[in-house]
Length: 381
Image 1 (cartoon, one colour):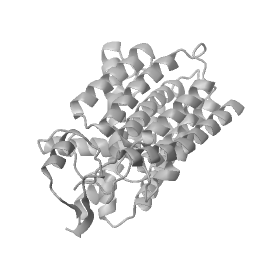
Image 2 (cartoon, rainbow, N blue to C red; image 1 turned 30 degrees about the vertical axis):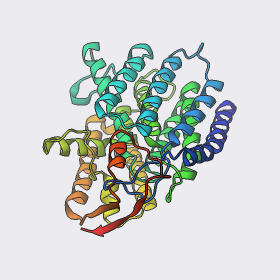
Image 3 (tube, one colour; image 1 turned 120 degrees about the vertical axis):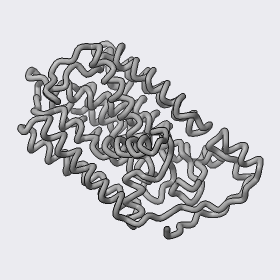
Image 4 (spheres, one colour; image 1 turned 90 degrees about the horizontal axis):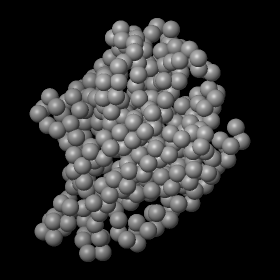
């Protein structure tokens, strides 16, 4: 327990000290996220918070996790390095969704084939138990990429992705501690502490965003933790076995997972790429309902916690009934919100300068010393 506590303290302190420095550097180098018609912030804000999260997580974990006793972690960190740097590049120089997807596949391959994280059973879902590698490995790729993108897409308002990530890592870290997996507990709480420090600067009005470097990192860590949890907790030989662990694992990620599936489905049905941007996410819908940023975060995190509690207390019902019930209820609620509420549009007024357009086409950052912007206004639609 002491080692976990030390890890969390180190991670929190590193992130808490690093993020203000990152904000200062971003200000001096004019590295800002540019407001547009889809984004919710009115002013330029640094989107490099993932740098502080990554430094804190890596530093604290490497001090306390032994690669000799837990060799899979060297591969986990290799995958995290890849995800972090591709996210950082996307925060500074915009990348296509296809390039990010390829890197996600590479990182997933490291975790699956070298780190040993893979789905080997469906635990009775659809009547299927053991999965042959020819089915289990592709399914693991799909799950990892889906979870990584779920956290990337849910990062749309101040505090939401960080709040959900904090909830997930605290819950899973507690299980790993009680279940006799100290390395995974350290890994979980190191990210929890880094996210807690980050949220101090990210709650509305945010001083910094986590950016893709943070959201892709969180998604990759969470995918590792959840898949490990389901595998361990489902085993009758585990120190702390839990019935319907697959349903509990899915419920831990309910809000980002359900929102991503719903948004992807809507985009595909409209004949668009599932990775094309829009304002149909659950946080956009709740904001259009009139809720504040803080209220949206509170609603989403609270709803997720309530669903986790409901699934846990109903765990004897089995994975099939629980997953069907929880996701059906969540999709129904999101559908009602999406179809019944008035929507507000964001309109961005700015001077159109040809050189700025060219620069924006290849970069997400802009030197404000030479370009001027007018503020964003919200107009009732």
